[in-house]
Image (cartoon, one colour):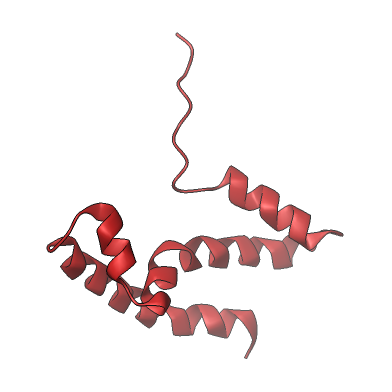
Length: 88
């Protein structure tokens, strides 16, 4: 089944987690929303999408040190990273 099968299985879980997160958002502030989610839904909402992208690229690149490569990729592609102010 492999990694691709995991990605397909996870799409439904991500959609469900997004719906739960949306509903939770109606009840509390942003950080409270994430804290209110069950573990699986929290991970599916916040971490899984970026990890799936990273691991897809990882298997294509197959670096000698995959952990170091993955760490660098995550830092570079962090969707929560604030954009640095551009000099004028």
